Length: 249
Length: 249
DNA sequence: CGCCCTATTGACCCTTGTCAATGCGCGTGG
DNA sequence: CCACGCGCATTGACAAGGGTCAATAGGGCG
Image (cartoon, rainbow over all chains, first blue to last red; front, side, top):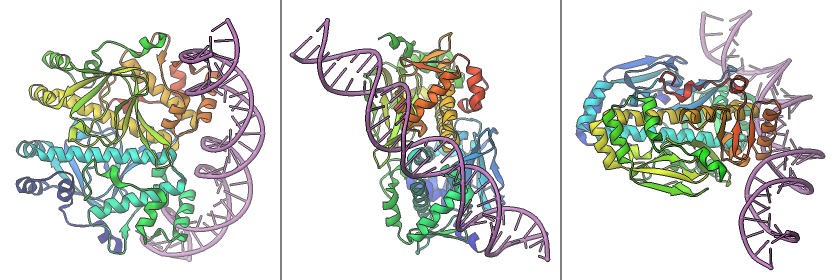
């Protein structure tokens, strides 16, 4: 499929991500690269992790796209996070806690595995790796907070616009946005609605508004932002929350 | 003021909280008790932490009640968490990240301080303490997720009921619920609305519904749940998310 | 060719927000 | 002791953002 390439990039994504939030010695970089040996592959819509299980390894999304969600008692669900290459699927391993949500691959995706014992050895030699992981967890938390801020009080149009700005920002950090401002976004409108607390129909209508205004085009699982600055201005997007206090780029 | 006592209990709250999620040796318990020497006191509505700052210590709420919130660009705000005695005010210290939100004391509150260097020494001797802290962070995360689940898709009535069930559950774990099912809840209706993504007026109306149904009485900063089971049934409350995979109590 | 999933549209309705007024309790200054 | 002001709870009337239902359309695929 044509889109496939859009969701891929080099296997060094995790490394780049970690390096973005904490400085890594060359020794640490080598350790990370050599340790991510096992890779699992998932088909579209397959479970990467299941609610309630416990996992003895760190799972890093290397290629593809995924989301986490939790069901409501009435059968509807809330998507709580989107994962892009470089993201850690679940931070439960930090405390040997059970995973509290399902993680689903969206298109075909690859997940790198890292044994906890192996990680422990790595961290022993290079403590900054643990700081990096914890900082990723902090960013993750901050991202969810911002989603709560959206769902709790932004208008439908702003929620959609804000999410597009966030994805544009996050994907650009892992080189998945091309020069024209396009990036792969393999969701259905229904799934976006599950994340933003809006119905499919309403998502559709707001997308059309953005399209008419020339602020966002969503076609063939690809989003193009012709004028990212204008879209940011529309919803007052401020990426500070994605950086955990680390200075810009 | 009469209510004061409702929000207080012994200074060993943190210890009890940690012990609830991870087993602690007596040595570890002693270390914790002796390390929490400095205590800061806050008046009602005073800032405990400010967005964007960085903090070199762990802050534990020992007595009182607090909340975290983030502002929207339009001046409204979203409350992202409520803190009860035993809760850690912010987990940014884990990764030396900046605090990403404001923490406000609700009634007069006391906060215990723990130097990071002191913590490091403690963890060296008793690694289970770090596991406990990380597990608290996981529970915290899970709690915010559940709030997102509420705001994203539950009806107003269920949101309110669910929050009351959650507070009842959490406060009962630190012995702040009395035999009649009453507990101190020092919020205004407007503040509860800021947490649940509802207007003050609407909060008021839903509270009245619960009152008429005999499911919850809110008077004088005190909430009474005459029939907690019935309230739980109403909103399908399931406290699993508050336990991070640790078996019940 | 037919099915299924997703996007799109229209009509209608309902939950929730907004605005504005009233009341109530409490603290303060006169 | 009383008048005033203020913050918070409560009510009513009205508006509106967004949900629901149902129908249509457009691929992609077996």
